[in-house]
Length: 222
Ligand code: C5P
Image (tube, rainbow, N blue to C red; front, side, top):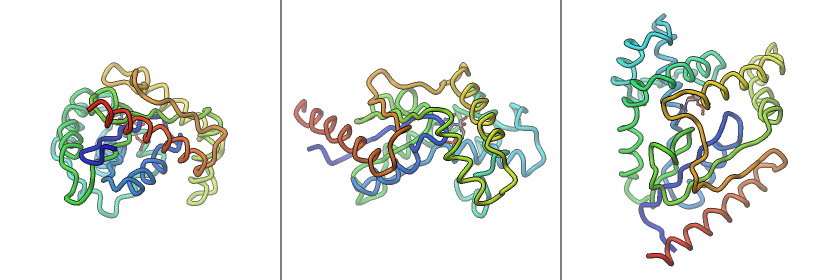
C-alpha cells in the first residue's frame, strides 16, 4: 500500500464533521494536517480586529498576502462573526490566489517523518490539490449540522439560539457554493460520505474504508 507523499483532500460544508474526521485520519495514517478554513478565518479575523470591512477587496487581499499562521496566536477565530467574515473574504479571487501557494506548499512538503498531508476545506479536491491521492466530500443534512454547531457554540455563549445558527449555516452554505471563485463542490472522483446518521466513530470507519480502498487501488496501478 502506498505510504509516502499521500495527499488526502477532505471537503464539505460547515459542521459536517470534516474537521474532526480529518484530524483522526491524519493521526491514524501518520500525516500532517492543515485546516484551510483557519486561513480564511484568519484573514476575516485580521479584518475585524483592525476595524476594516471584510468586504474591502484591497484590504482583504493585503491581509491575505501578508498572512502567516503565527498572526493567529491567541486569536479567537471560531466565533460566528469570524465565520461570516471568512466566508465573505473567501469569495474574493484575490484572497484565494494569495492563500493558494501556502496550501499547495503545505501539501507538497509534509514535515519530516510524516507520510503526507490531510487538508480540509471547500475546494481542496477541485482546486488546491486536484491530483490528491484520496478525495472525500463529507456532508450531512443542514439541520443536523446546525444542531452540532449550536451544541458547540452554546458551551461558550448560551444566548445563541438554534434558529440563528441554522440561518447562519444556510447563508454560509449558499455563499460558499454559489461564488464564482472555487465554489464548494464535490470533485467528480471524491467519495461522498453523509454523516447525518453516523456518530464520529461510525463515520471514521466509513472514511477509513474509502481511504484504504483508494490507496490499495493506487498501489496496484503503480
Ligand atoms: O471550515 P470553516 O467553517 O472554518 O471555514 C470558514 C470559511 O472559510 C468557509 O465558510 C468558507 O467560506 C471558507 N473556506 C473556503 N475554502 C476553503 C476553506 C474554507 O472558501 N478551502
